[in-house]
Image 1 (cartoon, rainbow, N blue to C red):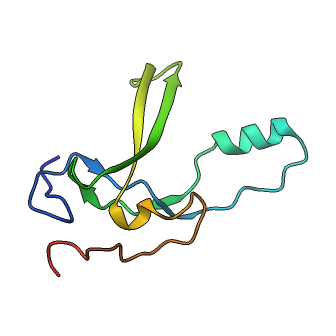
Image 2 (cartoon, rainbow, N blue to C red; image 1 turned 45 degrees about the vertical axis):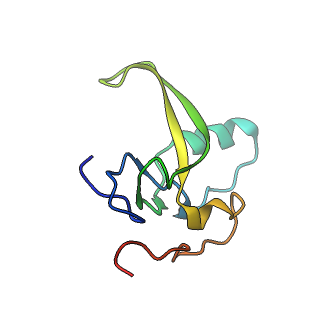
Length: 105
């Protein structure tokens, strides 16, 4: 990643993972249907602002295991938010213009 942080001129190493919009899940009548629906590809739009370590707010990690394909095996992905989305509860309303306004302001 050769981008600069949205908030400063440091190299970006992360992106904001705050979910701005997601396609809804279909109605499910059992836990099995719900698990199958979650596993399918869904359209999810995230903030994706580039962040340096100083402006990244870590909200946790996802442990991902794939049984086949080129990404076979297990790895950990971080869940990171920009400063403007860090204070919004998961599933809350997005402040699309996070505090600070970025380098261009």
